[in-house]
Length: 458
Image (cartoon, helix red, strand yellow):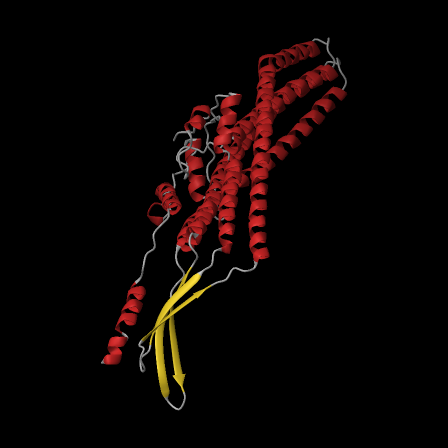
């Protein structure tokens, strides 16, 4: 009974540890968990995928964007990486697991039996700094989630615009093909009355055959474009093909260079990543400065057979390798300088990219105004005059074909400029200004962005 009493307190300590202990969360851990819970409520409520919005031809683009963001494997992978990094904060701020020890002396028989308990204790301040590093790492993972969300939305919009304007190009070419059939008929009529040679008929047929092949190529290009659209929605090849939105929706824009730049500096995912890496580098410096702080361990063993009954134990590391400590600090400081340089480079790059994209927008807008208000109407009038002149014998077939080609070319240029303009707007709003679609599984954005690029509403 005396030996059992000697083992009571160590046994009680082991039982309490086995029942489980909880550490004290840091402020960074609490903030990260609040952010994760806020995003999880939208993205994975109850740790399960919410019902995907139904897709129909009359559904708005916002429904397709919501479907893609909830279904994209890239977004899901980025979300889970972020969730894992948040959990890692708890791991880093926690004490190491205690160790149950057992020591015995045996000669001819058992002369000493000493069970015990040991605990490693990191030096003062090391655990909070490790938690700070883990919290900064979780910010880089959240920035990666933002990037995945915005890139997925851009891929959906880009594929959607390409498909829409592909149909426009096919429509224009088919309309022109019908016109060529009329011109061929007119050439035959002129040939039958001896006004022109059969060469005009052949020229009309050559032009028609070339345009027919162009239409076939455009129709064939729809398959890879549709595959891109389906992939952007996160759908696998064995799933039924989704519909394409029938209604065209442009990206809303209040184009102001100062507002755009402010929005980009506040929310651009590349800048957010660079800023998070800079915070991580600063935390790594604080961690490196703790390298010269010793770690400790303490324990207690109980002697079962021979007094004294309890044997305390303690140890301490000796951080004597000064060159190693100095190298760790120097490496962390160099990492901070590199992170600062990358952040500056990203800021410069975003400024230049914004200038280029806004120029592209202005150029395409000017080109569209020129094409739609002047060139296309005049080309149509020129074609009608050339057609009437050909029937009256005042214009030859070469001039008629030139007028027809100019009209077709201007219409196709108009479609190309519309495609370029819409993709530029999507690029500006998503990948540069970082404006996520309404309902995206992200934390709330600064107000400056919503006033510059109003998000799509369902």
